[in-house]
Length: 222
View (spheres, helix red, strand yellow):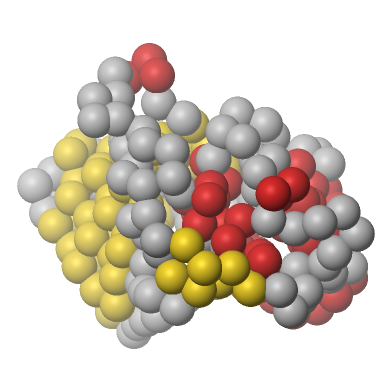
């Protein structure tokens, strides 16, 4: 997979946003955005969701093997921006130029069987690892095996995150602390969770062994 920073930069440029503009939109420093894009720093889970939400892309788009701009040639003529008024009609529906690029990125199937050594992996800040378990073309779902190392957290600053969709999770081993709104829940092996992802939430591993689970985030339709 190309570096995640490169993919985020491609998406930001297509969106027509400057580094400072994106940083202002999500409430972080321009320096942090620059460090993430140049691979000098890994984003936290909460920062990554904030960036992708601001850029109008999904986590699934970051896993696309062709890159966010790799298939844009047939959809967006050279020099056009993501705000170009052109629209396209295909089997999925009517799309703007940028929307068509993102739809095209989801046409490659991952599976139906994905062996452990063939998974795409994103390594994030604070000891968090995401492994993609599969993808069905045209379906807006993040199907992930997540690992929080001891001390790992979705936000190093302790801030909670919000993003679109509905979140489902199942803990396989270790323990995770889920902060959901004003409540804290200790998740142990066998525990399952489900909630609206727009509810402020965050995860952390206060234990001495990695916490591993299967997570499924169903994106809300545009």
